[in-house]
Length: 307
RNA sequence: GGCGCCGUGGCCAAGUGGUAAGGCGGCAGACUGCAAAUCUGCUAUUCGUCAGUUCGAUUCUGACCGGCGCCU
Image 1 (cartoon, rainbow, N blue to C red):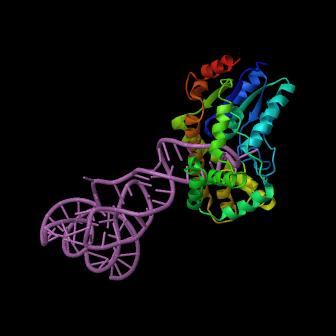
Image 2 (cartoon, helix red, strand yellow):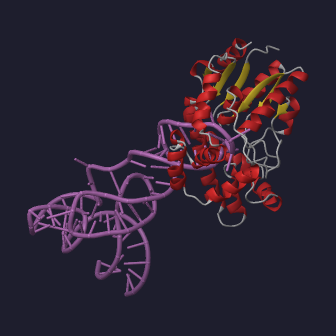
């Protein structure tokens, strides 16, 4: 195996990443390492578009079904485990290809996160409980004094900045700066990204994808999950599941649910495109549109270039 | 045919005689341990059409067009 470069295939949902990856993996005896924050969870199968049993029999997959639906997962944990899976793939004599749409996970693997200060778990849980009731506006005000550079971000980030400042007495923005300075002379460019996208065709593909899930028995899966998984489990955050729950529980008719799931998925895909457009090092990115007649050649060239 | 109600951006929808709330959708963006998450910005020179009253109308009057309801 090549060893030097790590290949990462990413892009918005519905672009056809896995088809590209499957073809590549079977042609080059590679293993697929899923970078997908929802396929992590067991039992949430249909709505997260996990690879089929046939696909998994054909190509080894890592990173799927590795957590219980109620577990809180994280980019940091994924990055650690992903390094393990890369080793596992090597043990099988296979090259790893990372494939997925969770930008932050990919980034955590490519550019390791700063090491977070250890804080007392009990104090943290206590603080979290207090902060939970606060509005975004309030959290923002706090953050403005505790860690100003982070104050423009969303609730999740605000919470973390405030917690770190209060519990560890450090600003995340400072920690980032130190971390970046420390690894500035590290060799970069060991990663080759293939961003799979198909612009205008994405909307139609997402619609078909949702219809496929519905036909595959998504509603039944959700009915079963409602029985077995607590309603606040993180796994429920996968797009469409909350809507499907409303439908299964009789609060939303099927056609409205379908329509809204499609919209939700489209909005997610849009956020992903923004991420991949701006958060990856441009020099390391190759863009393909599978719709394009040159697509095959581009993909092959991308693979060979990173050998 | 008569009577009544209604006609505001892609959709839903508030509103006032003084120059158009909000929501949805859409677009753009942010993003370093919950990321299929979370958050930010933008998105009607214009209120069915025409005419009238008025300093000024989307808001008042009339006609017409369109929709809905009821009656004959």
